[in-house]
Amino acid sequence: MKVLLLKDPKERDSGPDPYIQELGSYGFEATLIPVLSFEFVSLQSLYEKLSHPECYGGLIFTSPRAVEAVKLCLKENSKNEAWTKSLKQKWNAKSTYVVGKATASLVEEIGLAPQGEKCGNAEKLAGYICLKETPNSSSLLFPCGALKREVLPTVLKEKGILLESLTIYQTAQHPNLQESLKNYFSQQFAAIGPTTAEAMEAEGVPVSCTAENPTPQDLAAGIKKAFHL
Image (tube, rainbow, N blue to C red):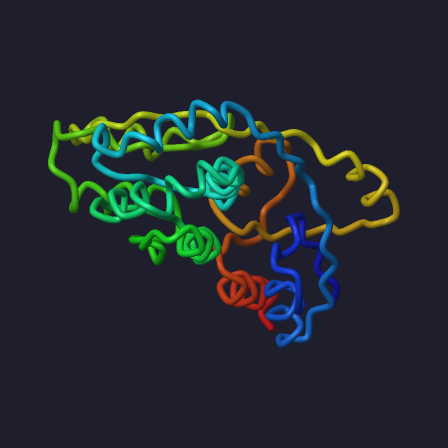
């Protein structure tokens, strides 16, 4: 059975995409088509905030793109040196909250210790953060995309957890999407998470199943269950 994956490919240089690999183990023939392109913005503002860890209680990353923005900030030798010598250590004295294994892995690459990766989505992470943080203490820095969901900010605000959001990337349709989809047709779809599912349903695309967590294993298991395989 064929499965169309509307997502970006794995970022690492070698080896198959984990979603294609996992679906293949269930007997699915997966095709991956990227649907989004990203433009980074406000990177100087982000670095200025990263340069003052004393002003914040911690960091929140809910997407790999947000961590990539930090990596871009640190490309210059002088900035990377400042991060390595002192800033990284100061941020590591605080909490760094993440959603998902991919984001957690990138956070580790910049030398920080992620928490909450098993939460699976922003709503669950918000609950996790509320258990860890003290109300009305220093704000948590939240580098995010322009189309972020408001679930996490809303939950934290209700619990008195201060948050400072900074938009550091914008999302647009991938320039090759129409061409890639031209000869591909599927009647049923699966969504990796609630954000994707909501967007698909808003466009009138039926969602047959939603992965419990944003992992290849959960997506493959969800598709298997939906098709009663």
